[in-house]
Amino acid sequence: MNGVANISLAAESRQGRISFIDLAAQQRRIRPAIEHRLQAVLDHGRYIAGPEIEELEALLAERTGAAAAVACASGTAALIIPLFALGVKQGDAVFIPSFTYNATANAVLVTGATPVFVDIDPATFNMDPVDLKKKIAEIRTKGELTPRALIPVDMFGSPANYTSIAKIASDEGLSVLSDGAQSFGGVFNNRLVGNLAPATATSFFPGKALGAYGDAGAVFTQDADDIDEWMSIRWHGTDNERKTSVRVGFNGRMDTFQAAVLLEKLAIFDDELAARRQIAETYDARLSSIARPQQHLSGAQSGCAYYSLCVENRDAVVEQVNKMGVPTAIYYTTPLHEMPAFAEFAPDETLAATNAVAKEIFALPMHPYLTPDQVDYICDVVEAAASQ
View 1: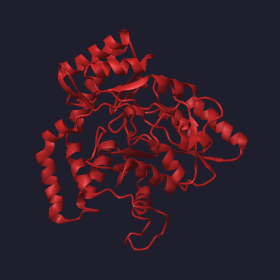
View 2 (view 1 turned 180 degrees about the horizontal axis):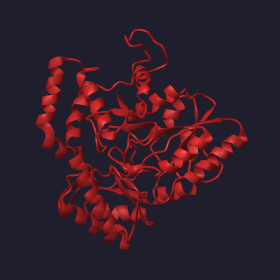
View 3 (view 1 turned 45 degrees about the horizontal axis):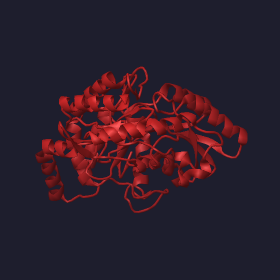
């Protein structure tokens, strides 16, 4: 989720400087450990495919319960790799929510396939299974494209409705690739993101709850037989000796430096996630009466990458909140089906819930280094602004 409108990264308030995301505070906490890790990379000199890559992949798989994890260059690469492996191609339809970052659509288009935009549930902000079934039926009726796969997005860290989505996919013979770019650490029915779908892509963009110091990502699988092909695709489609191309691929590798950083951030992730969830609980308790926070499915826990809520007079509220020293961001003011690059794929009818949420949504500061006083102040300011 790198595309942001009207973002204010930090501002001064009576509670001091409040950051939307505070990477500096996190770095102060773990800088000696990170420097030790980076020094180790400098010493062994394996800047590509260093031992930290395999160490990170093993820990990611162990943590999520996935059969395996493949580290890669970005969250976008993590989407493209399994799509290539599935053989998604021109003439195929891939169903995605329109309310997401453009990487989801771009990954589909890179394969030559056609993105089909699906509306969202106005409460969870995630793909609406009812509209998904409708869109699949429409594509089958038109007969111009072959329904091939679907990509639910765990918006802001909250897992999509994988129970319903898996049933639809099974009934329709479609592959499922989860876009968990924002949801690492999330849980649905006692299973962690990374093990909720046959394949799951995540992003380690610096602003994510688990972020590198540059672009990075990973793709998780429930079937360890996938990893040889995925590793080949991320290394230009080469064989095990990395000399002969045996399939179409691209440079999707993660740098060793990024793996080194992520290893130390992963070591404190559970502690940070607990703090994020406590902040989200406070926001929910304080703001639900004057705004509409994201709702989570029964059995779901968010990874709390971001905290977004809806208000009818969003622009006026955001202006007032910013004046009081509380930074905000808007994810997303323009749905994908209304962007020029994807206009030819826009549905004939309006995606009502998507358009409505895009006009009302904004995000509050969310990071584990907010103090309780800062969180209370943020709530005070939002309550005052929304009540005017």
